[in-house]
Length: 329
Image (cartoon, rainbow, N blue to C red; front, side, top):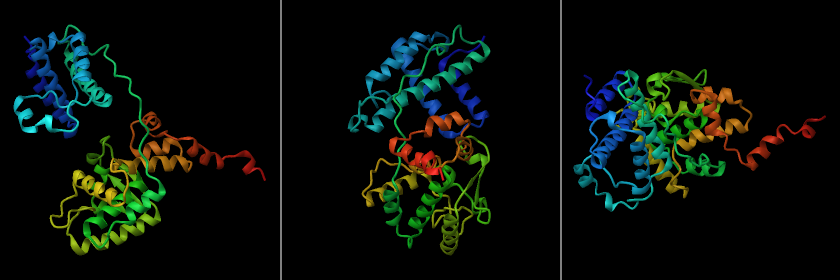
């Protein structure tokens, strides 16, 4: 007889995820969501087996997430003791709809996996839908703010010169920070003005090529000469002394420092550079299919949903390129 114990099935699911070579970040998200839900099920209803979980149980859990607030529940008491959640400024603040929807998505993946062999009398996630979420427009940075940001970096320092080039490359190619940080020198083709992104480093697990301008080519050539004087590394953007690739969190910390120096909104993230790339391409007349390919999206629909945040001023600027009266000779 199949072992339907929640903890056992959770471990089996994580083994399945590892066999599929899912990213560590994805697996951590699954495990955290499921461990929390497992403990909640036991404490609230003494549920031990996955076949005891019903649609009603899941809905009660979602309601509880909405009511209890942040950091009010942990997978184990030890973690709660170590983290001192009550000291956090956002303790018991509402959990965002986006976060709750991520939990719902992860639970759906798990119960769909369980349902593959008809282990459940009924899939409890079958009728559970994501919560309605008012989508926020993507964050952008103006030309003036961008110039001020990069203009205050001191390129005589290795780390700031490296970060300057990374910022330029990301806004000119649309690549993600994680993709940029792991580039090898050999991935860059200066003659063709192309960057090869390896499948193991891309979100979609597919090879992809992005492109850069002659202006960025000049910046890259100068950086390579500078880098080779101070760091021996196959990575394009290494840490000076170790030669290892710069970590995403390290760059994010540096980026916040640069924002503060430039007196810009410190909530702006490095991903804003990718957003800017997409918006500027659309504003300059690039078709959505080409943009989708460059960004590495799974479909054009993903690109449409993510990057069509054009306001009236943007639309007016685009209109000027297509005005019938302006083009009539």
